[in-house]
Image (cartoon, rainbow over all chains, first blue to last red):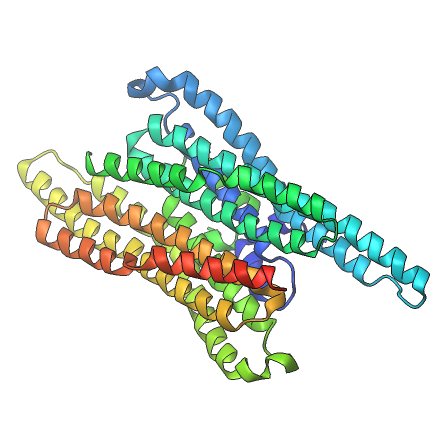
Length: 212
Length: 212
């Protein structure tokens, strides 16, 4: 089967819109994050090698390395979300005739739910990183493409807040309250300061645009 | 040449990251908007036909019609942004040897800049519509996929704020101040209330998730 990232963009959107449960919001969040990382890379690629930006050349090369690694991680999450969903659905389909089967099924579901929680949590963390990378691109990148750093920040923010909802879906179904609370706390730590960071980057980009 | 929407998602991301000026933030904004519309459609498709949602069946069918039309518009904007950029670059390449040529070139650039301003402005308007459609999906959609309505709102918001930056790039280059101001005013009208709307939808979705 063709992996989702290898399907045409139009087909991805068609499948997103369809009544099939996947791809869904989890994949959409990863695509937003991957777009953010890609746009940071674009700003780097259009800054590196330009004489008037020689001063930030080393910074931009380091940033590009980070943004490309992050893009690869986020792109792989488009599929990871689907895999986690499929695994969970398989667990829900386990037999539940006898008490024994019912107990085993319940335990499997809970164990897979814990695994599944990690997927959007990693996506949220990666999108938060993308926000910080877009800040660096907005601060030092080529003024001619500085708006792309702002778009990167907005795409990363969309991915972050979307992934956060998907963490909650899973933690709300977990019976292990201590575990669920620890994951929500991890998420809160990732979200902490993101609103302010994105607003700062956005206003920085807007100010740079109007000063040109 | 293969149209961008018909290229694999991975290739779209690669080209977004590359040092080619297009696709850039304008196309990324349209993709975010198209994802938002697609997710509204998904919520509709997973609500329509379910006995327990019979009461909202007609509303969901009407919403699906709107979200699919909006998705088609937003998908076409992925390419429209590239076309506008190419047209503008062609104008910048016009000869400027003589005073006459220089004057003609300047006039052509300004005229094409006016056209180019419409592209992100339409994208912003379409993303604003997607926010309202995601509100309807969040209010009435199948609770089992309600998080996708929240992701739709975040994707639409990312597309809206991104498109807004792209409107400013163009208006900042316009010499016709009255025209530029009128376009910024149009944009402000589109942006008006969007922050609050998205926050409301997001909190509504989060509350519905925790009540399940």
